[in-house]
Length: 138
Image (cartoon, rainbow, N blue to C red; front, top):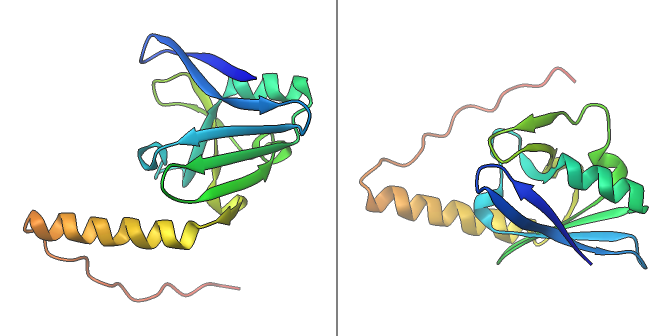
């Protein structure tokens, strides 16, 4: 079943994803541009997360067009350290991809990196400088 929500910035109802009650799985299809760099992951509207919890959802699958597929439990989206943020499209929860299991992510990241380098080169921007590795305390 399609799960819809109202997008404040677009001022219209949008499809947030598909929920299969039989398997307890919510599937959200996104493009690479939907990756929120400052949060390190993808977002789902707070209203949708709450509705999925009420419906008994167990798993969330994020399918990136032409790239990776990320899997997580709905409980990860409801964890207390996952803050609700509003960047103009309404309140959303952003789960870092580091907290999801991924299929195809390495290929996707490598392709994105290569595309970024080509774009920088075409614009005449020098390649990024490799910085020394930061040492960890543990």
